Image 1 (cartoon, rainbow, N blue to C red):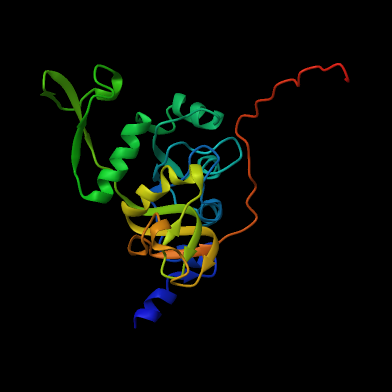
Image 2 (cartoon, rainbow, N blue to C red):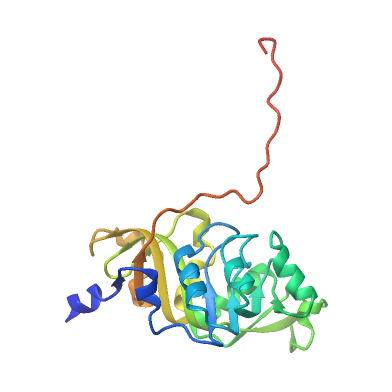
Length: 244
């Protein structure tokens, strides 16, 4: 029975993994930081399935033509809970036109709200945002003579995340920047689906290297063909030498 349960975590495609999961009005957490660590195949399948009225919790909403931008351009997102709008002109245009709701968070607060959701902590206090529009309408409290604003947890119906490697039990390892939001999101949703670049047998991963234990992961798919994009290419002129 245990072996059957483990085997059932591996799905053949994004379509199979999302079968019966997506519906109108759901709350989705989508991993990624800029162009790194985005669950590209799962986002593409959500676009094909077409659920509407989505609330999406993500650091950003992709960039022009990439990532969650595809759902935004397809009219599927009703509200974004994010910390960054830049690099996505459509995001800014829809928000300014009143066609997209936005709950803007300081980046660290967003990460902590997601972590709190996974840890079962309904609320916490932070100094970040005190005295700004971020704190409007939220309770405040004094601690050691300082004002703190109360923030609430974030939880979702579905988390779609991207990892580097998984074993057949759903244990995950991330690479570098992809580790920013994906691990916390894996813990804070009713269903978590991970797309990965490599799947290895159970027991092949060093337990000390596992970032997300498989208990948090419901489904895993193998994805490929990722393009390593650069969001802002910065170059400098090489110094001129006598041999030039």
